[in-house]
Image (cartoon, rainbow, N blue to C red; front, side):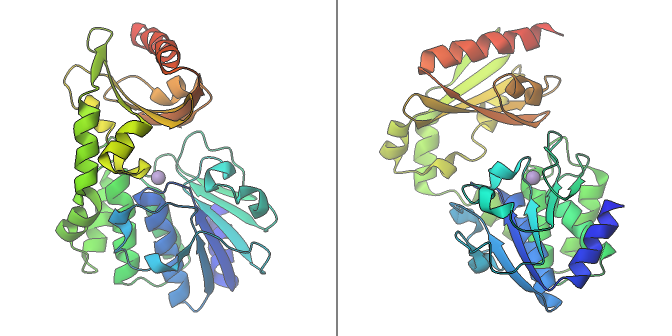
Length: 321
Ligand SMILES: [Mn+2]
């Protein structure tokens, strides 16, 4: 089994490179920190890579100072672990160089994972990659301590939206509960990682909420963030993390959409669904992907045109019911 082969590499190897996706969320950061910490505890040499930028809310996580945004891929690694990336490109500009390291081990939970690794451990039933890392630690008999536990907890907490999303399973609760046994404080971590709003983030929220629009008899809720709004609020791109939830909170909304301007005539669409629409399939029509209830894609073109284009495709998905 692939999981045993990976556990074997973790036990026998001496020097590892761990990477996760750019614009990291709590799972991307928490899972490389947890795996990194347990390997360091067992006397291995570990380099952690994330292209960033790393949101302020993760600044206090145990081991975060070890995460580098540039590395030398040719400095003799026994294996490369790429975590929480549906495709290798998600790791960022470095992804091309990463293919030189063998074996390349792909650990993920996205259904649309491209199986880019020499070994692929992809489990869409896991709430988070943090959960898969937990199982690997157990299987390879790697050590646990409070920092490992905290980072696994962060991965599960963030990817389940504080134990609210559909991926919140009994297993997720079970592992999170065990992490609390290591002294992790749910309240403290939640305040830092899930709350932890800055004034600039709230200013951005204020501007964004004014753009709220409803379409298709209130089944599509859409919000927009422009570069101009970011600069007016003094906010950064990652300050809008989870803002797509706001239109989703409106009762009757099935598809929530956040359109972010990321360049000139270039937009990122983040999608969430409440119940029955598979937004990964919807995003797929525009060259993107994700999970059934959380997905994204990018589009080039004038805002009003790309928006109309999206809305007509969204209508066809709503009509399927
Ligand atoms: Mn994840």
